[in-house]
Length: 148
Image (cartoon, rainbow, N blue to C red; front, side):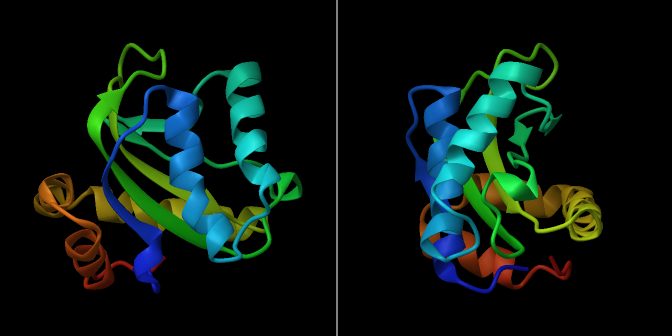
């Protein structure tokens, strides 16, 4: 599912939704999937449109438009040690952020479909939530049967 261990971050701490977004997007920047301004793109979009990327209770899929700094298609997973609120009655608080960088609409849709398939596996979601460190989270995601 993910190709680099740097794309898996377990039990990180964030004080706010904006800090959680920045934390979740950082691996995409470090791995060359997005430019630094991609973080600000997600934050600006959230301020303008609300947290449109909250997809299920406890789970966020932060992303921005390709022109806001996407370089390559990529995904990074971050779990939080303490969930944070994004101001959404149905999905808050958020403990899992799956940050996506997509260079075009087709790739974005393919990635979303793969993530949706992953989220159907409740046992895997429980294991992700219980991962105690980056390596454990990476091993779970690298062995997942869904390709992103």
